[in-house]
Length: 170
Image (cartoon, rainbow, N blue to C red):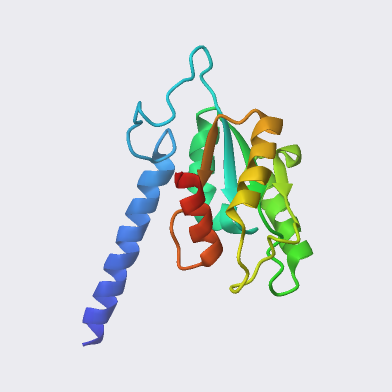
């Protein structure tokens, strides 16, 4: 019976190794074929100023890393607006520093990252965020950074992420 288990483990390891080898040996990042409708050029400009709007620090890593890497590989300029420090557990300063470090690792300059600490946009499962305030603060950054494309997270079981999703669907 042990040989069946060993054979299963060996098969899984082999499959993983072959998949990893295909990804690493690919001359370009492994992805789907380019879709010409996804972020088409704007007139005479080929690149865009993309704003990723996050509810909390770590959303860039949890939800956007593949998107950021893809957009950077196509020459787009990425900007990050984080609506809160993520201070629900009193770790806001640490989480803010982690966000800046993650953005640096993703080659997003610190001057293209803004983390807000607004009294009415505090982190916590029972905190309610004002859509009008989200719009006002986002528009300030859109104008400041000359943004032409806005992206945010999709629906979630987390109230703040769902609010962000529905707000930007308008």
